[in-house]
Amino acid sequence: MTTETTGKQAGLTPARPVRDGIALGLAVGTSGLAFGAAAVGSGLSAAQACALSLLAFTGASQFALAGAVATGGGLIGGVAGAVLLGSRNALYGLRLADVLRLRGARRVLAAQGVIDETTAVSLAQPDAAAARLGFRATFATLYLTWNLTTLAGALAAGKLGSPQEFGLDVVGPAAFLALIWPRLRAGAAERAVGVAGAAIALAATPFLPPGVPVILAATAALAAALMLPLPAAT
Image (tube, rainbow, N blue to C red; front, top):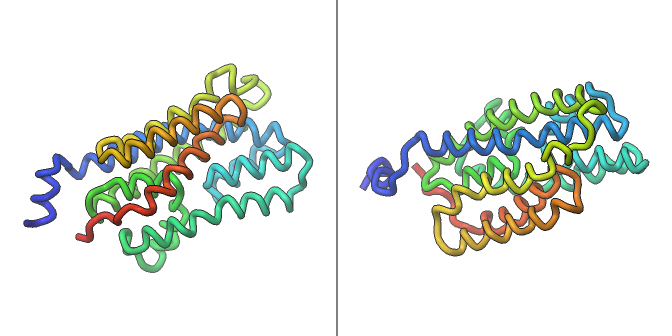
């Protein structure tokens, strides 16, 4: 039985991983508004906030750095915390290396996109070809949306008021529901992980800055996702 036949029997089409990736990228990317506003509010310039999103592109690390600067922790302490949080992406990269199978410059570019969301979408797919489609769609959509909304949030900082006034504090749980949606089509174990992750995001929302709850929830869910079998090779 060919991979194509297996995909058809499972009701999967090439459009599904792309659709999942775009939906997730748009949902999570909106949190860039909160980061842009928080970064400028902490004392960074709009240009510095945008540079972080362009070059670092890992939400938890960016929020950690902005938070450290805001509380007087200093740039060195903030960078150290950001690097520590971002180190989990190395684990994701090892997990995805055999699935993406990239070489040279393409591998360097893909490394920029190995984050919670791209890993989750990739591992939710039934085979390597679909995983690669999901990875590219999620990375492209999220990178573009995150950077555009970071710019908007940074420029509007001080004019929009508190992010909570505009509902940005609930973006985390909403984005995480989009993150786990592919997993809800799987078995009971995956659904249990999804429910637990959503509960973490909802519980953390009243106490943590906008954007942070989804990072906590995604990390918890991906701890289980990383133990699941890799998408079948094609």
